[in-house]
Length: 111
Length: 111
Image (cartoon, rainbow over all chains, first blue to last red; front, side):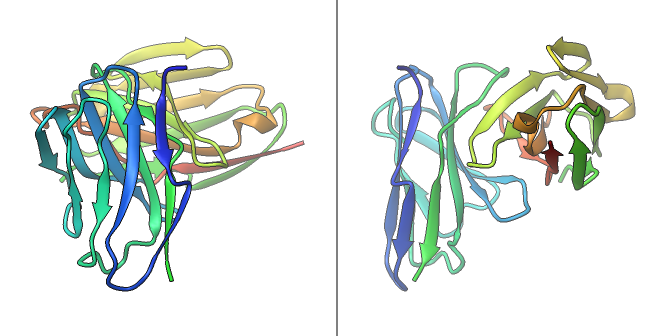
C-alpha cells in the first residue's frame, strides 16, 4: 500500500531530552512537511523539504531540527530547546499544488 | 501575515441536517483547500478550490477569490462527517506549496 507512516503513535519526553519522530512515505513525492497541532488550533508549519538534502524553516522552527537524506524519509527531532513540545505532530508529502497527503500523526507528551 | 478565519468554531447537527462552514482570508491567495480531520487525527483533503465551485457527493465548496472567502456545504449530514474541518491557503510567492491553516470548525453530528 502506498502512503505515509509516522512512528511512534505516542512518545514521551523527559526534561532536557531530545526525541526523534519518524516519517516515511512510499509515494515517491519530492516535497515533505512537518506540522504541529495544539488543542483547538490549526496546523502550523515547522519545516519543509522540496528535495533530498534540502529543507527550509517554517513558521515555528525554533527548537526543532530535521534531515532529508533520503527521498522517502523526513525525521523530525524535538530538541531540549523546545520548551513546550507537548502537541500532535503531523507529517505530510506532496507532488503537486493540489493535494498534501498526511500521516496518522504522533502525540508527544512531556513527563 | 495572512489571517484565515473560520466560522462557526463549533457546530452541532442532527443527522440529516445541512450546514455551511465559512472561511475568510485577509489577502489574495494562490490556493485554497478544505480538509477534514477525523476524531482520531487523520487529515484528508476534501477540495482544492482556489476559485469557483466544486461538488463531491454530499459535499460542495465555493470560493469567491475577489471577496476573499470560501464556503463548504455539507448536505444530509451523517455521523461519519463529525470531526474538524480546516481551511488552508497558500500565499502567492510562498513557494513549495506552504499552507496556512485556519483554526477549524468542529462539527458534531448526532444521531
